[in-house]
Amino acid sequence: MSADTIYVDKGANGAGDGSSWTDAYTSLQDALQAARANGTTDEVWVAAGTYYPDEGASANADDHTESFRVESGIDLRGHFSGDEQSLGDRTLARGGPKTVLSGEIQQDGTQSNNAYTVLRMVGGSAGELHIEDGAANGTGPQRRGGGAYVTGGTLHHAVLTGNRARRGAALFATGSPALEVLRVTGNHATEAGALYFSGDASTAEHLTVADNTAGSGPSGMYFIGSDAAIEDVAAGPNTTSTVAERIQITFNPKTVGDSLYTGGYGNPFDYTVSTDDTTFTTTGTTTADVPIADNDDLEISTSDPEYLSTIAANNTDTEQPPFQVNGFPDEPDYQNTTIAIPKSDVVNDYEVVGFPTTSTDGRNMEETILPHVNNATRFKNREANGQTLDEDKLYIIDGGSSFNTKAENALSTVRDVLPYPTSDPIILPDTDALVDSAEARNEFNYSYVESGSLLNNVFYDSGYIQSTSSSFDVSTSDGNRVSETYSATSEMDELGSNDINDYVFDDNGTLDKNEAALPLNFEYNSKAGSTLQP
Image (cartoon, rainbow, N blue to C red; front, side, top):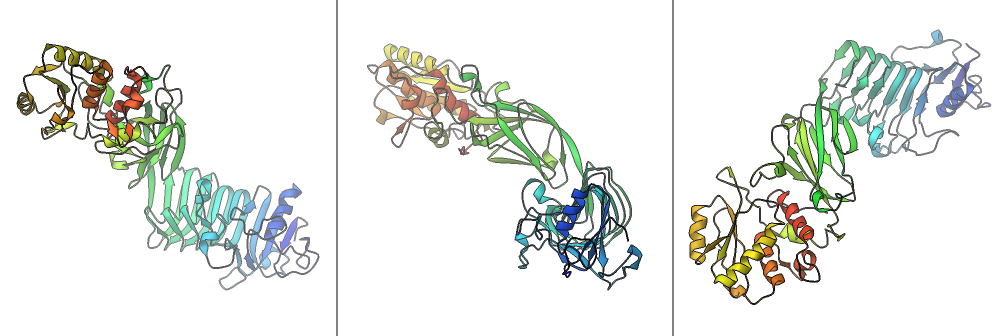
C-alpha cells in the first residue's frame, strides 16, 4: 500500500476523503479530481461496483458530457473487494470483484441519454475495468468513442462492451496511446469500427475483437491515417477491418454572376467538405488530402447565409467548367443542397458553385428573381442526340423594315446580357419558315420575335427545347420591345403578380443589364429541370 493511494468504494461510510478503504470516496469522479489536483503520482483503487461519471461533488448530474478523465500521474485500477493491502491481493479471475464504469447516467435503460464517452485518457494508466454503455450520439468529437476516447497513456486489461458511437463504438484512438489485453465485444457503431484508429501511432496487443456490429462500415477495427502497431488479435464474427484512403482533392469555389457585381460579389463562399472520417469548412481554393473509405461519399454543402443552400459542382479534373467552353455546356455534374459523390466517382479537382442571395442592386433573390428562375425551363435540355448545343439561334418574323429594325435593336440590347452564344438575328418570312428552320437546325435552341398581338404567339416544340415567342407592335416603346424580347430569350416573364420586368428594368424603362443577366446566369448554371433552394 502506498501513501499516494486514493481509495474508492461506493459502500464506504467513513470520512469520505479517500485515505483508506473505511474512509474511501464513494464517487470515482471525486477521487480522480483529487488525484488531478495533487500534482503527484497517485494510484486510484476502485472497489467492486458500478460507477457513473455524473456522480460526485465534482460532477454535473445527468450531464451527457461527463467522463472519467485519466491524466499523466494517475494509475486507475479496479477489481478490488475493498480490503486489499496490495495489488497482488486482488482476485482477478473470472467471477471475482468487478469494477464497472458505466455511461448509463440516467439509469433508466434508455441508451440515447447516456454519457457520450465513459472514459477519457490523455495520459496515465487505467486497467482491470469493465467499460460499458457509452453512447457517443452527439456531434463532432461527441460522436466518437462511446466507451473510451484515448489520446495517450495506457489502457490495459479492460472489457469494453455495450457501447455505441458513430465511429469507434468501444474505443476511439488518436495520438500515441498503448492498448494492452482488451476484450471488445457487443458494441455497435452506426457507421464503422468498434475500435477506430485515426491519425495515431498507437501500440496495441492482445486484443479480442468479436461480435460487434456496424451500420455501414467495418464492425471490428477501422484505420485511417494510422500508423498503429497491432499484434496478437483474436477475431471473432463481424471483425472486418479497413483503411480509409486519402485522396488529394482541389476545390475551386465560383460565385454565379460574380462579374456582374462591381468589384465582385464581395462575400467569400464558405462551403463544407465531409466524409465519414473528416469534416472541414473552408473559403476559397483549397487543396486537401481527404480521407475516404470504400462505400463512403464525398459530401459538399454550404450554410453560408450569403448564398442559397443549393450548390452545384463540376468535375474540372477531366472537364472544363461550363463558362470556359464554347457553346452551350453540359449541365452541372452535381447539384443539390448537399452534393454526395460516391468514392468510386471522386476525382482530384472540383469547381464548387454558389448562388448568391442578393441581386446586383441588393434585392433579395429568394423573393424576387428566384421564382422566375425556378419556373423557367429554358435549358431543360442542353444536349440533342448526345451532341452539346452550340448556340441560341435568333429569328425575327418579317414585319416590315421599320419593325425589323426595331426588333434587331431590341435583340442587340438583350444579347448583351445572355451568358451563352447567340447568332446574328435571321429574318424569316413567316412562322412556317421558322418551323422549317427549326427542323433543319434542331441542334439549336432558338428564340424569335414577331409583330402583332400577343394572342398571335406561336409555340413550336423542336423536340429539344420549346421556343418562347413574344410580339410587339412597331408603335410600342423601346422599353416594351426590349421587355418582350427579354422574355422571349429568357422564358422569364410574369409569374402570378410578380413581373420579372419589375426587377430587371429601371424606372426609366431601360434594361438594367446586370440585373437582367443575373437570373440567366442562375438558370444557365443550374441542373436541368431543378429548383434552387434558398
